[in-house]
Image 1 (tube, rainbow, N blue to C red):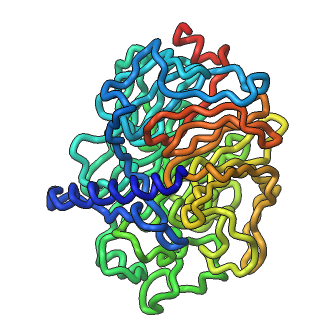
Image 2: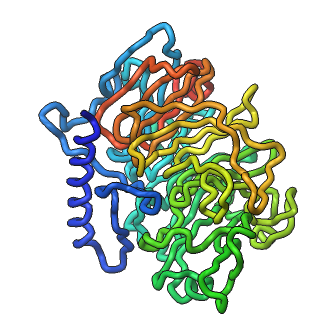
Image 3: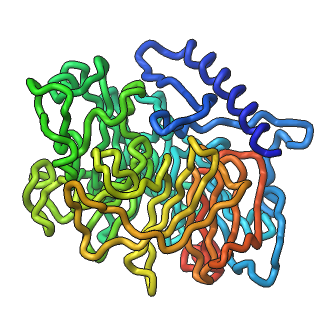
Length: 455
């Protein structure tokens, strides 16, 4: 019942997107949106936020504080976790906190819109990635601004990072030292791409990560995928090698059907215990693990840092085909929301696999190997510790999952809303209203950030 409606809606949105692209400025990069097609392994969908058109059943004015955000279904009240949910609705550029009855308790006024991630910190501020004014790079999920936002919606810190050559996008994370890390698309010209061994005759936008000190606005550390490539396309160009024999490097030509955005990273997670960064890479259908203990200089090489490998990949998982590994089972198909578990579950990792080509999403918890090791021509994939899927769980874009202290999981289905399921896989609660849900986060009622909001 739900899936045919989604296909019709996706087709209409695709038509509207292409009509808008025809009117775009010549200097703006406007990638082809393939979300109206049936996605395949080689055609990941992008995360372009879209506004829902109101219907007879949907008010044009969104609900405000004290009102119901949407429809709640309770299937087992005894097992629903107590707490609040922070909703990131990228389609409506809204961030609000609600209770489990969907009553909005607090909402922030974010004039630049979200692009995409916003989280509540322990001091009651938001940390978010917002949209730049008139960005030159406009792939789905673009940001351009990093901000701390106070409870009264005033901006406590703003960092602009958007130009013709780079833009922040998708995700931002607070480090224990008070700095923030974020993902960056950086332009490489067609000539640079060709010299690197690209099989495409166009500019490309590989990923980078930067760390910013909010007290000085200084970029204090950076990592660039560009420094860690391998290709078997042209032996007269840079980075030539055997893909399968170089699992710690990134196959530049794994994705060849996209308009420049060849990797499409969409999520960051920081491992404080090991000083590692986990990067969700949607178009490669895998997660890359990067050593943050390096200096910036070391991060551009293959030596240095706690693991002695510089900025090469310490570990990767989800899709062994991305580095021509014939061993290991592929799990991910357009993955979102990388997240390390803590407490008794240290060493486990959760992620949402959109399952675009399968039209079926799955939320996973994985047992990471200890130590992290990546070997050529061996099975490097982690074991599945827990998973959940359902005939009605499918969102080809965005989405995510967080573990609730009760042991339940809060699952965001990007084009539907939010589910709460138990360890045993029982669905106990759902929230739905038309929207485009990047992620949702669960907060206990005594969380310091909730207390700071005065709730």
